[in-house]
Length: 484
Image (cartoon, rainbow, N blue to C red; front, top):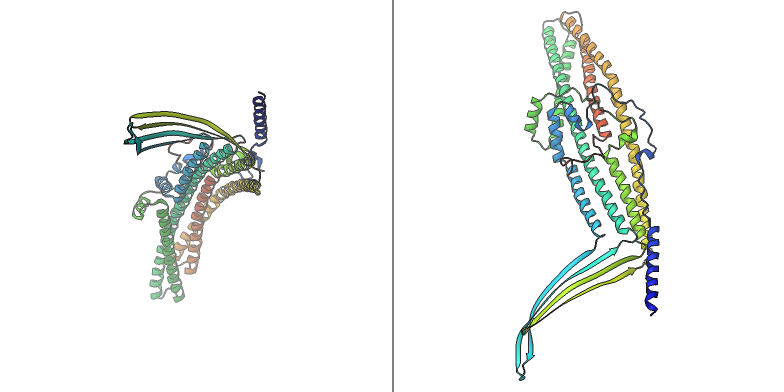
């Protein structure tokens, strides 16, 4: 009569022990915020400012170039990087579903039916033949009671990796937009440089023609005639080289966007592009706030969270596991006009598995998980430092190109005026051909510098767009168009 109370007390003591151990097996989830990773309290470079501020998420539309917007949309559809990121989201979502399913009971169903001949004897001893039909159906259930959180930690790790994959998809979209814009800017500035080269080549060709006529009439020395011809040949070669660079830039855009080259060239010929990308957008003065807009940092942060959850799961594997099984079934039998049916059910066994000796497997799993967590944390910290550097560098370049703009403009206008004056004096016979060529070289160099500065300024704004996350907001609810 006293055995049942003793068993009850033993079961209660076992349950209390398991709950106490479960409380000790806490998952050490620690994911530092960017502000806690030695991020400076404010930017050391000046923030961009001018006019009305454009919304960073709509920054490309603010440039007023429909060809650029269409190219970015096409490239995001054709990009293999975005397609791969989208595939990783699907895989991560499936992994999270699998990890979450482990926390729920598993139920498997089975059914079978057989017909077989049965030999029996009648009342007079004569043999009787017949057919027996047997039908069986049942359900078997099993459930691992997640006492120490191993399965919950695995689910949390899968959820963190899903969130990281989604952030990686956003980062791929921002990167593709920046790459296309950079290549498009390269092409447009190449076209401007080509126009300069063609104008310079035409001017030198005309000078060479006049010098040749003057040389035949005896008014120009052979050396000056040779100089004019050499200058014209140099200009033609420079123009040919510049045209080839523009063709290469077009082909790069074809590869990025997936458009046919004929269609792209037609759109480029019709549309006019702005001289540079210049639509200032606001940047948070506190770096930690600005860096929260970078999807790559969220991806790194989620990698830390996943590694931390993996560590908790590895630690929980060292504790006992409790599983519960059950079954329910039904049987129907019919033979020689006789039918029999029955049902069965069972709950149990309630099984406790206690790791005793595994050759160091559990300890090695914990050590490996700890190393992966340390690696993920170090990579996250390095990513934050790199993000700060990228923003600072982009801010410096934006400021520097803005400061150089007026000087480059004045230099270009001054050298252009000097060349025009020297050319007029040359045609009047008051300046020599070497003087004219020197003035031409100065004017061309100044104008080339001005066009190159416009390209640098566009590149600086694109780099700043990329460095601050491209307008992505981790706290905003994604729309159906922005979510794969």
